[in-house]
Length: 432
Image (cartoon, rainbow, N blue to C red):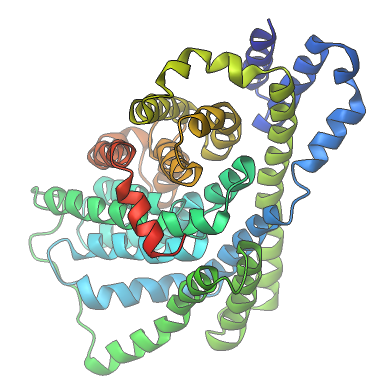
């Protein structure tokens, strides 16, 4: 009965149009009332709600969101694109490879696929379309290539999972680098075959080649933007600062570069960045607080144990358990955004993962990657929506061009679940 009350109250909240955070609070209150006794005390609900966001580690999230906003407004995006264009802009489908590489570089600055797609898509999709590229294929590539943003550090979903699971965010950041590189390689391979089809790219591409003097200027100018991820990763790996402190350093660095080096950001732009990042961070942190409240009542009512009791027989077979859990995550991710999915599924799945002896850091990396797949798949597909808006493409025209990337990325996720060494070996090399 408790499970029925929990699930039914959450589904009802979602179906009547409540925000996910409010729906989680509704199901927490309904579960507390179903348990009866002292568990329905409003003081307990208020306390667990506050504990969900009262965390030093959680502060990494708004700082990295703010850093991304400042970088978007400070001129870093176009310099990264110009930097990439020097090296790979003149091969067949060159602007596509520029897009893929720019997405990887920008991912190390932002940490959000939606923000990265909005920033890069507004520039790259029109640029490709004006150069004779198929607009729908260009939008699909931009959306799919931006899936590295929630995986490459500083990753917002990794921070959320680290807090929910109680594992090292530094290790999650280090572990996300190899899968981000894998995603970039896969996007490049798929684009190689897509760009060979007639009508996707112009038969005679005309990409202006910068003179040696211009190339040196672009490289030197872009180094200021590219130096930030080096600072963050080196500091985290060496242990000089925590993930939260890295977020603060990223903000300060971005402000200095935007105001005094590139001089493209004014004080009024900085204020707008503060407001925008505060709104975005408030949504995620309130969601985390509501999820913590729901997780508390899930725990005391033993819902995770009851829901996963049918999978306990797989504890002795960790690989099969990983595959089953990943299938569940893919299905949930098709209908739910990344952060709510992580917050809801983590307390349910983590006891099984620990019992099976699976490293929770490795599980978290694959788990987040599986959740991220839903960003480019209907019916939710928030990154698809952003790509459609920035590229002026209808949703029904972008779905099919996205499928080759989606299928290849899904295969990669299951391969990582089958071969943990693909994640764990690079993680050890990077000191995670």
